[in-house]
Amino acid sequence: MTDCGRDAGGRTMLAGMLADSHLMPIELLPAKAAEHAGAAGFTEVTVFLADLRGEVLYPLTEDTLSGSSRDDPPLRIEGTVAGRAFQYGEVLAAGGPGRWWVPLLDGTERLGVLRVTSTHDDVRARQDIDSFAALLALMIVGHRNTSDPLAELVRTEPMNIAAEMQWTIMPPRTFADGRVVISAVMEPAHSISGDVFEYAIDGPLVHLTILDAMGHDTAAGLCGALALGACRNARRGGADLLATGEAVEAALIDQYRRKRYVTGILATLDTRTGVLSWVNRGHLPPVVIRGSRWSANLSCRPAHPMGTDLGIEGTVCDEQLQPGDRVVLYTDGITEARRAGGPEFGLARFTDFLIRHHADGLPVPETLRRLTHAILDYHNGRLQDDATVLICEWLGPTTGPSEQAAALTGLPEPDGHPRRSSREHDTPEGGRP
Image 1 (cartoon, rainbow, N blue to C red):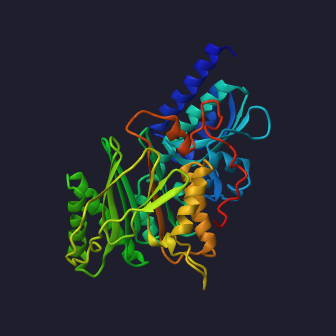
Image 2: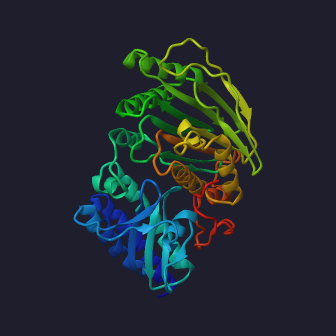
Image 3: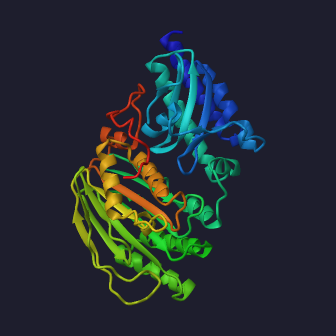
Protein backbone atom coordinates (compact mmCIF):
# COMPACT_ATOMS: atom_id res chain seq x y z
CA MET A 1 0.00 0.00 0.00
CA THR A 2 1.34 3.46 -0.89
CA ASP A 3 1.87 6.19 1.66
CA CYS A 4 -1.15 8.03 0.23
CA GLY A 5 -3.26 4.89 0.59
CA ARG A 6 -2.18 4.43 4.18
CA ASP A 7 -2.91 8.08 4.92
CA ALA A 8 -6.41 7.60 3.56
CA GLY A 9 -6.85 4.35 5.48
CA GLY A 10 -5.85 5.96 8.77
CA ARG A 11 -8.23 8.86 8.23
CA THR A 12 -11.05 6.49 7.28
CA MET A 13 -10.49 4.45 10.44
CA LEU A 14 -10.68 7.47 12.74
CA ALA A 15 -13.49 9.24 10.88
CA GLY A 16 -15.64 6.11 10.74
CA MET A 17 -15.24 5.37 14.43
CA LEU A 18 -15.93 8.98 15.36
CA ALA A 19 -19.05 9.14 13.19
CA ASP A 20 -20.45 5.96 14.74
CA SER A 21 -19.64 7.09 18.29
CA HIS A 22 -22.45 9.63 18.53
CA LEU A 23 -25.25 7.05 18.64
CA MET A 24 -23.30 3.92 19.55
CA PRO A 25 -24.04 1.97 22.75
CA ILE A 26 -20.95 0.74 24.54
CA GLU A 27 -21.88 -2.88 23.74
CA LEU A 28 -21.07 -2.22 20.07
CA LEU A 29 -17.66 -0.68 20.70
CA PRO A 30 -15.64 -3.92 20.38
CA ALA A 31 -17.23 -4.86 17.04
CA LYS A 32 -17.09 -1.34 15.64
CA ALA A 33 -13.48 -0.92 16.70
CA ALA A 34 -12.52 -4.09 14.84
CA GLU A 35 -14.56 -3.04 11.79
CA HIS A 36 -13.08 0.45 11.41
CA ALA A 37 -9.54 -0.58 12.32
CA GLY A 38 -9.50 -2.78 9.22
CA ALA A 39 -9.35 0.32 7.00
CA ALA A 40 -5.84 1.04 8.34
CA GLY A 41 -4.64 -2.57 8.08
CA PHE A 42 -5.40 -3.76 11.62
CA THR A 43 -6.86 -7.26 11.69
CA GLU A 44 -7.41 -7.41 15.46
CA VAL A 45 -8.06 -4.74 18.08
CA THR A 46 -9.06 -6.03 21.52
CA VAL A 47 -9.53 -3.74 24.52
CA PHE A 48 -8.47 -4.79 28.02
CA LEU A 49 -9.44 -2.63 31.01
CA ALA A 50 -7.61 -2.56 34.35
CA ASP A 51 -9.55 -3.20 37.53
CA LEU A 52 -9.84 -0.48 40.18
CA ARG A 53 -6.94 -1.87 42.21
CA GLY A 54 -4.56 -2.34 39.29
CA GLU A 55 -4.17 -6.09 39.58
CA VAL A 56 -5.72 -7.55 36.42
CA LEU A 57 -6.80 -6.63 32.87
CA TYR A 58 -10.28 -7.68 31.77
CA PRO A 59 -11.15 -8.13 28.06
CA LEU A 60 -13.80 -5.68 26.87
CA THR A 61 -15.97 -7.81 24.60
CA GLU A 62 -19.62 -7.96 23.61
CA ASP A 63 -20.05 -10.90 25.97
CA THR A 64 -18.44 -9.23 28.99
CA LEU A 65 -20.39 -6.01 28.39
CA SER A 66 -23.69 -7.83 28.02
CA GLY A 67 -23.07 -9.72 31.24
CA SER A 68 -23.55 -13.05 29.52
CA SER A 69 -19.97 -14.17 30.01
CA ARG A 70 -16.92 -13.44 32.08
CA ASP A 71 -15.40 -16.82 31.43
CA ASP A 72 -12.25 -15.52 29.75
CA PRO A 73 -9.70 -15.25 32.55
CA PRO A 74 -8.27 -11.77 33.10
CA LEU A 75 -4.60 -11.09 32.47
CA ARG A 76 -2.47 -10.47 35.52
CA ILE A 77 -0.69 -7.12 35.48
CA GLU A 78 2.28 -8.50 37.37
CA GLY A 79 4.47 -10.81 35.33
CA THR A 80 2.83 -10.37 31.90
CA VAL A 81 3.84 -8.43 28.80
CA ALA A 82 0.38 -6.83 28.70
CA GLY A 83 0.80 -5.75 32.32
CA ARG A 84 4.22 -4.29 31.62
CA ALA A 85 2.76 -2.19 28.78
CA PHE A 86 0.19 -0.90 31.28
CA GLN A 87 2.73 -0.27 34.05
CA TYR A 88 5.38 1.56 32.06
CA GLY A 89 3.43 3.09 29.17
CA GLU A 90 5.28 1.16 26.46
CA VAL A 91 4.19 -0.38 23.18
CA LEU A 92 5.46 -3.96 23.45
CA ALA A 93 5.59 -6.93 21.11
CA ALA A 94 2.72 -9.39 21.56
CA GLY A 95 4.27 -12.48 19.99
CA GLY A 96 5.12 -11.95 16.36
CA PRO A 97 5.59 -9.29 13.67
CA GLY A 98 2.83 -6.69 13.63
CA ARG A 99 1.40 -7.74 17.02
CA TRP A 100 1.60 -5.31 19.94
CA TRP A 101 0.32 -4.42 23.34
CA VAL A 102 -0.55 -0.72 23.30
CA PRO A 103 -1.28 1.44 26.40
CA LEU A 104 -4.85 2.75 26.56
CA LEU A 105 -4.82 6.27 28.03
CA ASP A 106 -7.40 8.99 28.54
CA GLY A 107 -5.06 11.96 28.66
CA THR A 108 -2.67 10.57 31.25
CA GLU A 109 -5.12 8.34 33.13
CA ARG A 110 -4.32 4.67 32.57
CA LEU A 111 -7.38 2.68 31.52
CA GLY A 112 -5.82 -0.53 30.23
CA VAL A 113 -4.20 -1.82 27.04
CA LEU A 114 -5.05 -2.81 23.47
CA ARG A 115 -3.95 -6.05 21.84
CA VAL A 116 -3.37 -5.26 18.20
CA THR A 117 -2.49 -7.24 15.09
CA SER A 118 -1.48 -5.31 11.95
CA THR A 119 -0.58 -6.14 8.37
CA HIS A 120 2.13 -3.50 8.71
CA ASP A 121 4.99 -3.60 11.19
CA ASP A 122 6.47 -0.11 11.19
CA VAL A 123 6.41 3.26 12.92
CA ARG A 124 3.50 4.48 10.81
CA ALA A 125 1.31 1.58 11.96
CA ARG A 126 2.19 2.33 15.56
CA GLN A 127 1.29 5.98 15.09
CA ASP A 128 -2.07 4.99 13.61
CA ILE A 129 -2.90 2.63 16.45
CA ASP A 130 -1.80 5.22 19.02
CA SER A 131 -4.33 7.68 17.55
CA PHE A 132 -7.00 4.98 17.49
CA ALA A 133 -6.26 4.04 21.10
CA ALA A 134 -6.70 7.68 22.15
CA LEU A 135 -10.08 7.83 20.41
CA LEU A 136 -11.23 4.55 21.99
CA ALA A 137 -10.17 5.81 25.42
CA LEU A 138 -12.25 8.96 25.01
CA MET A 139 -15.26 6.89 23.98
CA ILE A 140 -14.89 4.49 26.91
CA VAL A 141 -14.59 7.33 29.42
CA GLY A 142 -17.60 9.02 27.84
CA HIS A 143 -19.69 5.96 28.72
CA ARG A 144 -18.15 5.35 32.14
CA ASN A 145 -20.75 7.21 34.20
CA THR A 146 -23.73 5.82 32.27
CA SER A 147 -22.77 2.18 31.70
CA ASP A 148 -23.31 -0.36 34.46
CA PRO A 149 -21.46 -3.11 32.54
CA LEU A 150 -18.34 -0.91 32.35
CA ALA A 151 -18.52 -0.21 36.09
CA GLU A 152 -18.99 -3.89 36.88
CA LEU A 153 -16.19 -5.01 34.59
CA VAL A 154 -13.46 -3.23 36.58
CA ARG A 155 -14.53 -4.63 39.96
CA THR A 156 -12.95 -7.70 41.46
CA GLU A 157 -15.28 -7.84 44.46
CA PRO A 158 -18.60 -6.33 45.59
CA MET A 159 -18.54 -2.58 46.27
CA ASN A 160 -20.09 -0.92 49.29
CA ILE A 161 -22.46 2.05 49.03
CA ALA A 162 -19.95 4.63 50.24
CA ALA A 163 -17.38 3.56 47.64
CA GLU A 164 -20.09 3.65 44.96
CA MET A 165 -20.64 7.31 45.82
CA GLN A 166 -17.01 8.30 46.23
CA TRP A 167 -15.74 6.90 42.93
CA THR A 168 -18.51 8.77 41.12
CA ILE A 169 -17.48 12.18 42.45
CA MET A 170 -13.69 11.78 42.24
CA PRO A 171 -11.69 13.46 39.45
CA PRO A 172 -9.54 11.21 37.22
CA ARG A 173 -6.76 9.60 39.18
CA THR A 174 -4.01 11.12 37.01
CA PHE A 175 -3.62 14.52 35.34
CA ALA A 176 -0.68 16.32 33.79
CA ASP A 177 0.25 19.34 31.74
CA GLY A 178 3.55 21.17 31.31
CA ARG A 179 3.32 22.61 34.83
CA VAL A 180 2.22 19.77 37.11
CA VAL A 181 1.79 16.04 37.35
CA ILE A 182 -0.97 14.91 39.73
CA SER A 183 -1.83 11.35 40.69
CA ALA A 184 -3.93 9.81 43.46
CA VAL A 185 -5.06 6.44 44.80
CA MET A 186 -7.65 5.27 47.34
CA GLU A 187 -7.80 1.95 49.15
CA PRO A 188 -9.60 -0.27 49.96
CA ALA A 189 -10.94 0.44 46.48
CA HIS A 190 -14.21 -1.46 46.91
CA SER A 191 -15.01 -0.42 50.48
CA ILE A 192 -13.73 3.10 51.08
CA SER A 193 -15.94 5.24 53.27
CA GLY A 194 -15.00 8.80 54.26
CA ASP A 195 -11.85 9.65 52.29
CA VAL A 196 -12.02 11.90 49.23
CA PHE A 197 -9.43 13.74 47.16
CA GLU A 198 -9.78 16.69 44.82
CA TYR A 199 -7.69 18.69 42.38
CA ALA A 200 -8.75 21.41 39.98
CA ILE A 201 -7.01 23.72 37.54
CA ASP A 202 -7.85 27.43 37.76
CA GLY A 203 -5.67 29.23 35.23
CA PRO A 204 -2.18 29.26 36.77
CA LEU A 205 -3.50 27.94 40.10
CA VAL A 206 -3.83 24.27 41.03
CA HIS A 207 -6.18 23.49 43.89
CA LEU A 208 -5.36 20.38 45.93
CA THR A 209 -7.62 18.92 48.61
CA ILE A 210 -7.71 15.79 50.71
CA LEU A 211 -10.51 15.10 53.20
CA ASP A 212 -11.06 12.38 55.79
CA ALA A 213 -14.53 12.09 57.32
CA MET A 214 -14.92 10.44 60.70
CA GLY A 215 -16.14 6.87 60.75
CA HIS A 216 -15.94 3.84 58.47
CA ASP A 217 -19.52 3.49 57.30
CA THR A 218 -21.99 4.81 54.74
CA ALA A 219 -22.58 7.89 56.91
CA ALA A 220 -18.86 8.69 56.59
CA GLY A 221 -19.21 8.49 52.83
CA LEU A 222 -22.16 10.88 52.90
CA CYS A 223 -20.23 13.25 55.15
CA GLY A 224 -17.18 13.18 52.88
CA ALA A 225 -19.30 13.78 49.80
CA LEU A 226 -21.01 16.75 51.45
CA ALA A 227 -17.66 18.21 52.49
CA LEU A 228 -16.29 17.90 48.96
CA GLY A 229 -19.41 19.46 47.46
CA ALA A 230 -19.23 22.39 49.88
CA CYS A 231 -15.50 22.80 49.14
CA ARG A 232 -16.07 22.93 45.39
CA ASN A 233 -19.04 25.26 45.73
CA ALA A 234 -17.16 27.75 47.89
CA ARG A 235 -13.98 27.66 45.81
CA ARG A 236 -15.86 28.14 42.54
CA GLY A 237 -17.69 31.04 44.14
CA GLY A 238 -14.38 32.83 44.73
CA ALA A 239 -13.67 31.85 48.35
CA ASP A 240 -10.06 31.76 49.50
CA LEU A 241 -8.57 28.87 51.48
CA LEU A 242 -9.76 30.06 54.89
CA ALA A 243 -13.24 30.91 53.64
CA THR A 244 -13.51 27.55 51.88
CA GLY A 245 -12.73 25.73 55.11
CA GLU A 246 -15.35 27.79 56.91
CA ALA A 247 -17.92 27.02 54.20
CA VAL A 248 -17.28 23.29 54.60
CA GLU A 249 -17.66 23.62 58.36
CA ALA A 250 -20.93 25.53 58.00
CA ALA A 251 -22.36 22.88 55.68
CA LEU A 252 -21.39 20.07 58.06
CA ILE A 253 -22.80 21.81 61.12
CA ASP A 254 -26.03 22.60 59.29
CA GLN A 255 -26.44 18.96 58.35
CA TYR A 256 -25.00 17.10 61.35
CA ARG A 257 -25.24 19.58 64.28
CA ARG A 258 -21.62 19.00 65.36
CA LYS A 259 -22.05 15.25 65.53
CA ARG A 260 -19.75 14.54 62.57
CA TYR A 261 -16.55 16.13 61.39
CA VAL A 262 -14.01 16.07 58.58
CA THR A 263 -10.27 16.68 58.72
CA GLY A 264 -8.42 17.90 55.67
CA ILE A 265 -5.79 19.89 53.86
CA LEU A 266 -6.91 22.68 51.52
CA ALA A 267 -4.06 23.85 49.31
CA THR A 268 -3.32 25.98 46.25
CA LEU A 269 -0.16 25.83 44.14
CA ASP A 270 0.69 28.89 42.05
CA THR A 271 2.45 27.34 39.07
CA ARG A 272 3.94 30.71 38.04
CA THR A 273 6.04 30.95 41.18
CA GLY A 274 6.00 27.52 42.83
CA VAL A 275 4.47 28.90 46.03
CA LEU A 276 2.29 26.36 47.81
CA SER A 277 -0.31 27.81 50.18
CA TRP A 278 -2.36 25.59 52.47
CA VAL A 279 -4.66 25.42 55.46
CA ASN A 280 -4.62 22.47 57.86
CA ARG A 281 -8.01 21.56 59.32
CA GLY A 282 -7.01 18.99 61.96
CA HIS A 283 -5.22 16.77 59.44
CA LEU A 284 -1.81 15.17 58.98
CA PRO A 285 0.65 17.75 57.57
CA PRO A 286 1.70 17.64 53.91
CA VAL A 287 5.07 16.19 52.96
CA VAL A 288 7.43 17.64 50.35
CA ILE A 289 9.87 15.30 48.60
CA ARG A 290 12.81 16.96 46.89
CA GLY A 291 14.83 14.88 44.46
CA SER A 292 15.76 11.42 45.67
CA ARG A 293 17.23 12.41 49.00
CA TRP A 294 15.14 14.78 51.05
CA SER A 295 11.67 15.00 52.51
CA ALA A 296 10.07 17.25 55.09
CA ASN A 297 6.75 17.72 56.84
CA LEU A 298 5.23 21.12 56.21
CA SER A 299 4.34 22.52 59.59
CA CYS A 300 1.37 24.84 59.91
CA ARG A 301 -0.70 25.53 63.01
CA PRO A 302 -3.86 23.48 62.46
CA ALA A 303 -7.38 24.73 62.96
CA HIS A 304 -10.03 22.42 64.37
CA PRO A 305 -11.59 19.68 62.21
CA MET A 306 -14.41 21.01 60.05
CA GLY A 307 -17.79 20.44 61.65
CA THR A 308 -16.68 20.70 65.31
CA ASP A 309 -16.92 24.51 65.70
CA LEU A 310 -14.17 24.55 68.33
CA GLY A 311 -13.12 28.11 67.51
CA ILE A 312 -9.46 27.42 66.69
CA GLU A 313 -8.53 30.00 64.09
CA GLY A 314 -7.11 28.78 60.79
CA THR A 315 -3.77 29.88 59.35
CA VAL A 316 -2.64 30.10 55.74
CA CYS A 317 0.94 28.85 55.45
CA ASP A 318 3.27 29.11 52.44
CA GLU A 319 6.16 27.04 51.14
CA GLN A 320 8.44 27.91 48.22
CA LEU A 321 8.84 24.83 46.03
CA GLN A 322 11.63 24.06 43.59
CA PRO A 323 10.89 22.56 40.15
CA GLY A 324 10.63 18.80 40.59
CA ASP A 325 9.36 18.97 44.18
CA ARG A 326 6.53 16.58 45.02
CA VAL A 327 3.79 17.62 47.43
CA VAL A 328 2.23 14.59 49.12
CA LEU A 329 -1.17 14.71 50.86
CA TYR A 330 -2.34 11.55 52.61
CA THR A 331 -4.75 10.17 55.18
CA ASP A 332 -3.92 8.24 58.33
CA GLY A 333 -4.85 4.89 56.80
CA ILE A 334 -1.57 5.07 54.86
CA THR A 335 0.76 5.44 57.80
CA GLU A 336 -1.26 3.57 60.45
CA ALA A 337 -1.68 0.32 58.50
CA ARG A 338 -0.26 -2.56 60.55
CA ARG A 339 -0.34 -6.29 60.99
CA ALA A 340 -1.89 -7.65 64.16
CA GLY A 341 0.62 -6.99 66.89
CA GLY A 342 3.09 -5.37 64.48
CA PRO A 343 4.35 -1.81 64.02
CA GLU A 344 2.57 0.76 61.87
CA PHE A 345 3.61 1.19 58.25
CA GLY A 346 4.67 4.63 59.41
CA LEU A 347 5.58 7.95 57.83
CA ALA A 348 9.28 7.11 57.42
CA ARG A 349 8.52 3.88 55.56
CA PHE A 350 5.91 5.69 53.45
CA THR A 351 8.20 8.53 52.35
CA ASP A 352 11.13 6.18 51.81
CA PHE A 353 8.98 4.09 49.46
CA LEU A 354 8.09 7.18 47.41
CA ILE A 355 11.67 8.42 47.30
CA ARG A 356 13.12 5.07 46.20
CA HIS A 357 10.56 4.53 43.45
CA HIS A 358 11.01 8.11 42.25
CA ALA A 359 14.74 7.42 41.99
CA ASP A 360 13.96 4.31 39.93
CA GLY A 361 12.23 6.51 37.34
CA LEU A 362 8.82 4.87 37.62
CA PRO A 363 5.77 6.74 36.32
CA VAL A 364 3.98 8.38 39.24
CA PRO A 365 0.75 6.35 38.80
CA GLU A 366 2.78 3.14 38.85
CA THR A 367 4.57 4.21 42.03
CA LEU A 368 1.20 4.75 43.73
CA ARG A 369 -0.16 1.44 42.45
CA ARG A 370 2.82 -0.32 43.98
CA LEU A 371 2.50 1.67 47.18
CA THR A 372 -1.09 0.56 47.77
CA HIS A 373 -0.12 -3.04 47.10
CA ALA A 374 2.75 -2.73 49.58
CA ILE A 375 0.43 -1.28 52.23
CA LEU A 376 -2.16 -3.99 51.62
CA ASP A 377 0.54 -6.61 51.93
CA TYR A 378 1.78 -4.99 55.15
CA HIS A 379 -1.77 -5.20 56.51
CA ASN A 380 -2.24 -8.83 55.34
CA GLY A 381 -4.50 -7.74 52.49
CA ARG A 382 -7.24 -6.03 54.50
CA LEU A 383 -7.13 -2.39 55.65
CA GLN A 384 -9.09 -1.26 58.69
CA ASP A 385 -9.18 2.39 57.55
CA ASP A 386 -9.28 4.28 54.27
CA ALA A 387 -5.84 4.97 52.82
CA THR A 388 -5.59 7.81 50.31
CA VAL A 389 -2.59 9.54 48.72
CA LEU A 390 -2.51 12.59 46.43
CA ILE A 391 0.81 13.57 44.84
CA CYS A 392 1.42 16.79 42.92
CA GLU A 393 4.80 17.42 41.30
CA TRP A 394 5.52 20.99 40.22
CA LEU A 395 7.51 21.07 36.99
CA GLY A 396 7.61 24.82 36.34
CA PRO A 397 5.53 27.67 34.89
CA THR A 398 5.37 26.52 31.25
CA THR A 399 1.91 25.38 30.18
CA GLY A 400 2.84 23.49 27.02
CA PRO A 401 3.41 19.71 26.86
CA SER A 402 6.80 18.58 28.09
CA GLU A 403 8.92 15.46 27.84
CA GLN A 404 9.25 15.49 31.61
CA ALA A 405 5.50 15.37 32.17
CA ALA A 406 5.15 12.62 29.57
CA ALA A 407 7.83 10.52 31.24
CA LEU A 408 6.39 11.01 34.73
CA THR A 409 2.97 9.77 33.62
CA GLY A 410 4.18 6.92 31.40
CA LEU A 411 3.19 8.26 27.98
CA PRO A 412 4.81 6.26 25.16
CA GLU A 413 6.73 7.91 22.35
CA PRO A 414 4.92 7.95 18.98
CA ASP A 415 7.21 5.12 17.81
CA GLY A 416 6.34 3.06 20.89
CA HIS A 417 9.64 3.43 22.74
CA PRO A 418 9.68 4.37 26.43
CA ARG A 419 10.61 7.91 27.42
CA ARG A 420 12.63 6.87 30.47
CA SER A 421 15.28 4.49 31.58
CA SER A 422 14.14 0.86 31.69
CA ARG A 423 16.50 -0.11 34.50
CA GLU A 424 13.63 -0.57 36.93
CA HIS A 425 11.79 -3.21 34.91
CA ASP A 426 13.06 -5.98 37.12
CA THR A 427 12.17 -4.22 40.39
CA PRO A 428 9.97 -6.53 42.50
CA GLU A 429 6.41 -5.27 42.65
CA GLY A 430 5.14 -3.60 45.77
CA GLY A 431 7.49 -5.45 48.08
CA ARG A 432 7.87 -4.35 51.63
CA PRO A 433 10.03 -1.21 51.77
